[in-house]
Image 1 (spheres, rainbow, N blue to C red):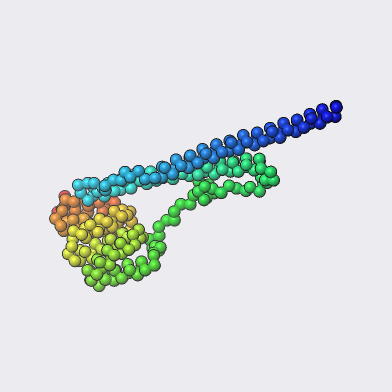
Image 2: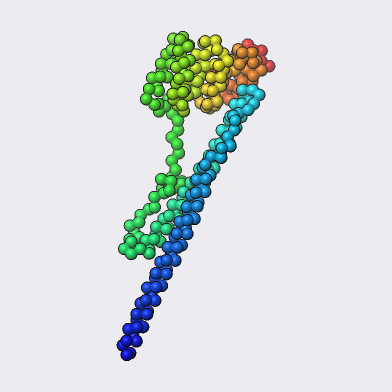
Length: 275
């Protein structure tokens, strides 16, 4: 009888230990599910922030071309700052999420039978990189060796040859087609500048001025910007917009003091009797 009692007591202890272990596992898994749910909500919140609100502006406003250029630059500065802020937040969430997933993997391995914690290794980053501090910066633009699409260089060269030969109509058409065929090309501003010259050769000064404005506003600090700004000012003078022309031509020296087009702009200001 005493042996039976001892056996029952040992069985009760084993049953109690097994039940406690099962309850601990259930509690731990519930905690992990809760943390995974929190992480999922964080990711959903980030996805919502990256969604567009539809609140687009209707374009730059201003009474003069220069006012509109300044408005464009101001908007670009604002958008750049907003992009950098979002990039910082995304990197922070990526790092935090990666660390939390690594912690969850470790805890799951602890409660699984036969799991080797030492074999887990590093947790792959949510962003595809080792850490937010190692996010690679975009490669700097190399104007002397742009990455061109197939046929892009040939099409641009064909248009330049037409312009050099004085076939302004063909050049204007080829350059307009270039802008449509290769949007976002590294030669976009150069093509717009060349198209302005072709239109000017055709006597279409108004549209030439628009092409020069496009070339400048596309990259106000690019290598085509000084010439585009000078030719824009000159074209404005040619169509009788002397006040705007004088202001625009003066900006050449202000923005690009070392450019050879500063002298051309100064001579044109003298010819327009600018104050």
